[in-house]
Each structure stands twice: as structure tokens, then as C-alpha cells.
Length: 443
Image (cartoon, rainbow, N blue to C red; front, side, top):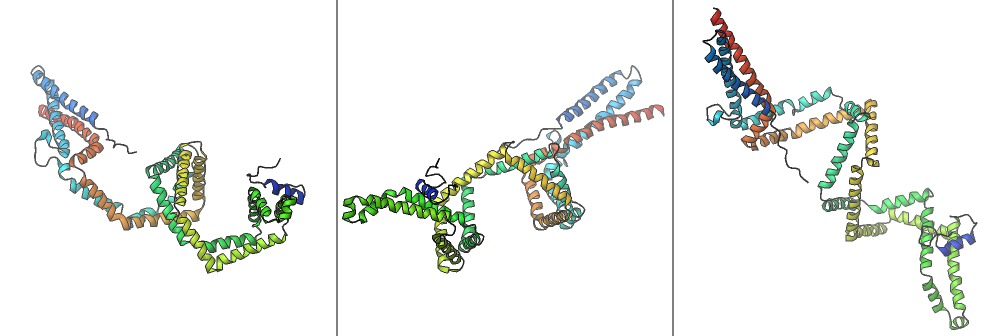
């Protein structure tokens, strides 16, 4: 069965001519999360313990005349209340005024917020962002091998989490950027780079290399097929031209139609012969023309100027911009779909590539040396160039926080341990009071 004349095969008439002339062989932004108050339970525990000591003290005070042993209980409870209250005052004074009374040297953290910010920044500068410190710490670290061991792990959930994290990061990046604006920016960047490239010599080198390697045959065959399709689509126009140019005698005898058919058959046969005969003279002429074109593209200033004008006209054409935006949107949508599909090829390819990279980093000492040197130089350069800016950023950020924010964040971080201090103060105070009362009674 012959292919349809619009398919990639030969047109019907050219196909018939080839069969005749040759052998029968075919051709969104989340709201900020407020940290939970992790010290709340310990604060309640410490307060209840203090209340319990007060209750024990009242009970022991009333029962002391009944039996001397109640004196030891009273001494323990009394000292425990004193110790608990003292530590409550100390802990509270760090973050706020006790009972709202502006006692001097209380609410220490809110009142010294700026000094705390400067201290944090100075600590960060001295211990982390000094180039000498960074170089010394990086000298004994094999960053490349550690990264390779992590990436090469195929068991467990690390590789899956890494692929998922990398994929989600890519999705968030693609979704957070304005598609049209990003597409225009990419198009503008590509256009700027294309304007800098002299495309004519490049095309000439490609065409010349293809001819030298005998890889230009498909180009000529494609041109012949295109000529056959064009001729088949315009048979009526050719017939009309032949009939109009025939004299009256030929038209009167009715030979004009046969003449037109003969012309068309001859053209089809000629194209078929060129297509199947690699040594056909017209094919040699086409090859000669392609060689001249390749030479002119590389050496003829006039030809190069014409190609550059065509290139610039295409880059300035709005249709090219619209075409690129459509291509970019399809690429972006396809990437998002593939990354979000856990069974997609992109996810598997990403995991395999990461595992191969990890094995290479583990087994290649030379590559480890280069990666470690690059990491060390990069971090030292970052510390040298941007260390002060990072320190200022930390300091200025903390200074811009209101006092309540600073207090809440620090209290949430260390408040649980501070409540343990209250509990320990209550118990230790009670033991001290009990010891003192025992000494008094005995001696």
C-alpha cells in the first residue's frame, strides 16, 4: 500500500516514478508558624510544687506543738518556699518585671535586646565567619567523601527524601515565578546570546562537515521529496501553463493535455532518477551548490550579512516570542507533572544520577581533592566577602524585632530548663532548711 501523499514517504506520482525507474526495493505563602510553649507544663509543675510547699508549711506550723517531728517538716517547707520564690523571681526577671512591678535590673532580656544582638553577631563573626577559622575547620573535613556517602545510600529513606526534596524545590521554584515574565526573561537572555553569535560561519562549518562526511544525502533527498510534493500539489497549474503556451493547432487536436501529462511525467521521472542515483549529474550540481553555500557562509561577508539580517529579523518577530512562550509553558508544565509523579522517569533518573555521583565522589581521590578545594575556597571567599554583611544582617534583624518577640523566642528555647531551676531551687532550698534545723536541734 502506498503512503498518503502528505506522509513522510514519497508523493504518489513520484513514488510511481521511483518504482518505474528503479528496482522494486522500497525507500502561595503559608502563614508563619508560632512555636508552641514547650515550658508550659514545667512552669505549671514548678508553681504547683511551690503551692504544695506553702500548704505543707501551714499544716506543719499548726501541727508542730503536737510532735517535735513536725518542726523538721516545717523547716523543710519554709526553706523550700524561700528557695522556690527566689528562683521564680530570678527566672521571671530575665524576661519581664515580676508581678508587673518595674524593679531595677529586671526584664533583663527586653531591655538589653540591642546588646544581645551585637553579642550574637560578634560571636558569629569570631567563631564562624572569619576566613582563618573557616579554612582551619575545612582543612580537616572531607566534604566530597561525606557527600558521596550520603548520595550513594540506596537503602533507607535518605535517597527518597533527597529526591523528594530536590523535586519539591524545583516545583516550588517553577510555580513561584511568574511564567510569562520568566519566559520573557529567558527569551530575552537567549536573544542577547544569539545576537552575539555569528551564526553564518557556524552554519557553514556544520554544512561543510556534513558534506565532507557524506552526511548531506538526507538533506538532498528531503529537498527532492519536497519538490515532488510541491509538484503534485500544483499539477493543475502546470497543466494550465502548458495549455496556454501551446499553439492553436495543438489545442485544436487535443494534444495539449497529453503534452501536459508528458511534462509532468518527465518531471516526476527526473526527480525519481535524482533520488535513486547517487551519481546523477543534477545531484552533483546540487552538491556543488551546497559546497559553495558552505564556503560563502564561512568566508563571504555579503552572505554572512544576509544571514545575520535574517537572524535578527527572526529574533525581533513577535511570532517567535509567542512561539517561545508556548514552548516554555509546555516545558514548565511537563517538568512539574513529572516531578510530582513519584513513578515518573525524572524521579528515577534523578535518583540514579545522584547515586552515581555519590559513588564517583567516594572512589575518585582526585575528584575529592578538587571538590574539597573548591568547597574550602568557596566558603573562605564567602566568609571574606560577605562575612560582615551576614553579621550585620543577623544583628540588624534581631534589633528590628520588638522586645516581646525576642523574649518569647528565647523563653521558648530555654524556658523548660529555667523551670527545672525553679523546681531544683525549691527542693534544694528545702534540704538546706532541713539541714540547718537538724543542726540546731542536735547541737
